[in-house]
Image (cartoon, rainbow, N blue to C red; front, side):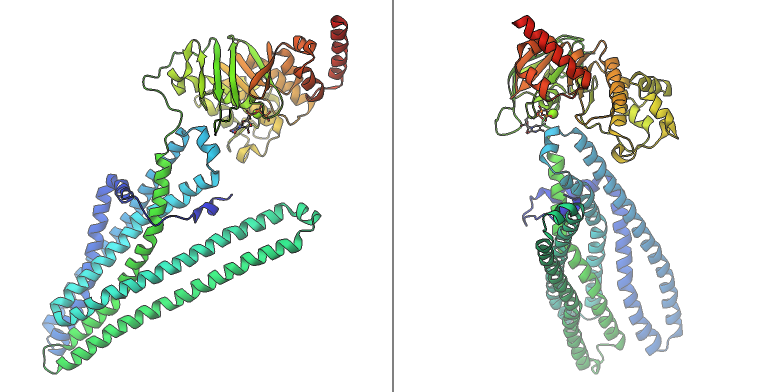
Length: 609
Ligand code: M5T
Ligand code: MG
C-alpha cells in the first residue's frame, strides 16, 4: 500500500495528556528561536492594533481639529513604527522557517535512528507504507503545528486581545458588545473549519483508493482482460468516483458558506455599534474617529478569529500525528544488548544450537528442538522443501531474532551475552534477493566498510570474479546501479553482494542462494566467488546449487523445523531418503549432473544390494 493510504488513518478523539508535553519538549532545545519569534509576533500584532488607534487620532486630532503639528507628529510616529513592524515581520517569518526546519530535522533524525535500531520482527509486522507515512506526512504535520500553528494562533490571540483592549480604552460599553459576540463567532468558525477539514480528509481518502484502483487495473490489465472483468471493474470504479464527487461537493458547499456566515455575524455586531454610536454621537461622547476605529477593529478581527479557528480545528489531526510518531519512537527493539553485554574480540569457534525452539507468533513452533554443533571452518549446506525453516535458522544465527527456548552458543558463550555489534559486524550475509542501494558499484561494495581503499574494493571484486564485468561498464566502478540495483542483472547483483561480503572479511559467512537461474558462465563465477569466501570460514549456505551442496562438509535436510537428515552428499544419497528425493526432483543440475546421479545411484544400488 502506498504511504498516502495510511495518511488519513482514523484516530480516536482522546489524547493522552503527555502528547502536548512531548510536543513542547520538541521545541525546548530551540527555545531562543521560539522566544525570538514570539517577541516578533507580539510586536507585529500590538503595532497592528496601535495603527488603527493612530488613524483614529489622525481623524480626531489632525483632520477634525485641523491641527497640522499633531498630524505631522502622528505621521512621523507612524513612519518609524512601520519600519519597526517590517523588521519584526521579517524576523518572525525567518525564525519560523528556521524553527520548522530544526524541528523537522530532529524528528527525522530521531525516527531514522530509531528505525535502524528496531528489530526485524517490527518490520515484518508493520507495513512499509505505514512507517513511510509516519516519517513523511506526520513529521510534516507536527512541524507545521509547532511553527505556523503556533505563529498563527499567537498572532491571532494577541491581535484579538490588543484590539479588545484598545476598544475598551476608546469606549468600554461598545467594547462589551463586541466581546459578547466574539465567542459565538469563534464557535461558528471552528465548527465550519472542522467540517470542511473532515470533508477534505474524506476526499483524500477516496482519492487514494481511486489511485490504487487505477494502479491495479493498469498493472493487472492482462488478467482483467483475460477474465472479462471490465464491466464489473468499471462499476466498482464508478462507485468510488461518485463518492468522491459527493464529498467534493460537500466540501465546496461548506467552504462557500463559511465566510458569508462569519461576515453576517460580525455585521450584526457592526450594526449594534453603529446603532449605539448613532445614539451617542450627538451627545459628543463618541467621536467619528472612534466609530471608524471600532469598525476597523471589528472587521480586522475576523481574520485572526479565522486563523485561530483553523489552527484549533487542525490541531486534532496534528496531535494524532504526534501521537503516532511518539508511538513509533516508543516501540522498544525486541532484541537489545543485555546489560554487561561484551565483545569477545572474535566469534571464530564452535557454534552450538542447544534445544532451540522458535516461533514468529502464536507459539506455533517453526523450529523445534534443534540441536547442532558447527565446527569452526566448516561449510554447512541447508536444504529442504519450502517453509521448512532454513531462512529462520539463519535469521536466528544472525540474531535478527532470538531463540524462544534453548540457546545458541558462539565460541562457548551464550550469544545473548555478547553485544549485537560483536556478532553482526562479524557475520557476512548474502541474501537470496541481493539488495543493492542506489549509488555506484563502488559504494555498494564498500557498504559495510566505508574506509576501504580502491585496491581493497577491486581485490574483493576480483576474488569473486566480478571484476571483469564491472570493467566493461562505461564508468567501471563508478557506474550507477539504479534504485535497488535495477540496472544490473540478478547474477551481477549477486556477484556484487559477494564482493561486499568478501570486503567486510566476515568470520561467519551466510548465504541464501538465489533460486532464480543465471546463465552457466555467471553461475560458475558465483560458485568460484563463494568458494573464495568459504575458505577458512564457517559458512552456512541455504543451497540450491548442486555444486555448492557437493562441496559442503555437511548437508542438513531441514523439514518442519527439524533436522531430518544429516551427512555428506554421498552418505545421504545412499540413504535414499528425503535428500535423495529432493536431489532427484528439485535441484537444478545440468545434463552431466543428471548422468552422474544416474551413475551414483546405480553404484549405491550395487553396493547396497
Ligand atoms: C518457516 C514462517 C513461514 C514458514 C516458517 C522468514 C519468516 C518465516 N515465517 C514467518 O512467519 N515470518 C518470517 O519472517 O516460518 O519459514 P522459512 O524459515 O522462511 O522457511 P524456508 O527458508 O525453509 O523456506 P524457503 O521457501 O525459503 O525454502 O511457515 O511462513
Ligand atoms: Mg528461505
